[in-house]
Image 1 (cartoon, rainbow, N blue to C red):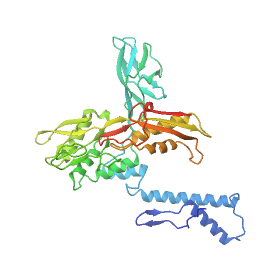
Image 2 (image 1 turned 135 degrees about the vertical axis):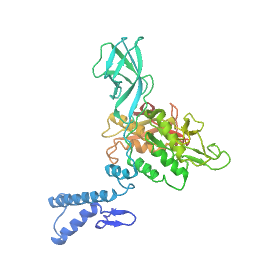
Image 3 (image 1 turned 180 degrees about the horizontal axis):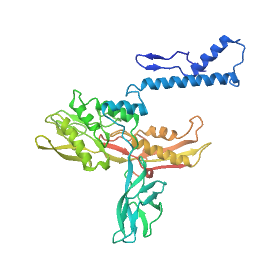
Image 4 (image 1 turned 90 degrees about the vertical axis):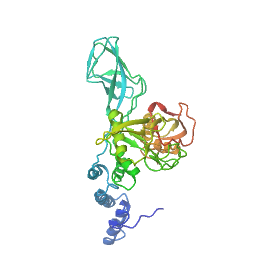
Length: 421
């Protein structure tokens, strides 16, 4: 039988910060004080009105302590959360990255000359996508435009999923379909990601040029993810420095080089790539090769020195996206409904898209992610009977998926199959 810790008034610990008593210890202390005033023979079972009153008071006191703890923690970016974190990082000239919207190419068909104003299309999941303000169907009866999802975040849409005309049909507009999968947007920057970016921003004037370069990249508008630190098995990738006179192992990067890996918002276009290249140009060390790498995301961007006019080509990599496939079979228990399958699928997709560049897809994490959709683990709605993962459409793996330092996991609903049996 577990024991309740003794009640201790809130205090400031030199290491832990503000320490507050637990709800259970507050309730136990209030009961003990009540018994000290009144005869100990007074019955205070959980079914009594007095116990309920004491528990309500204890909960209110605990809530007040939590509020005080949040206020205390709001003084530092290490412990501040939400709006408090937004306020404090303004001192570093930073702001939380807002969510972006998914986009997709859309083939619009209909009668030549038809003008569509404020057109909307809907995908198979019920998400609404907006056409440009006006679209004119040309001779030939079809035109490809870009549609933008009206829901922020990483909304997925497979080929052909955005196909229903909605929001009031226009005469002469007969069809719509996306010829390729949507480019997912990004969710609002999480507290943990913002803290990491703030930590890098204050490293800008640091003693190492590599840390300064990474900090400068982190401050570029439109940068979503970037590889940092020293690569470790199973950990996030890194912006690798090779100070030796020979090609390094095991990555194969050139001597005396830095290999930066940066994900830039697609809507930033070539301007976003130039901003990253400029940040690298301004912070790199003298005589250092900025390695464009040899992956599909290799970038070589010319940067013009504003004072001398000298043009120097800066190299870096954008991450290579590795689609992750998974098949999971669950067995329904009390409280299970078919909606659970979609919830599991969405949770796994979100987990995969939240991983950092070079970070390993941990096989066991998918179990935890799937179970997180249940309201209570003590009253499970389902059990997981099988799980296979891989990087092909017929996954058969039961181990971690390790990625290279410039690769990042990509999750899509069409690649995560969850069934009940």
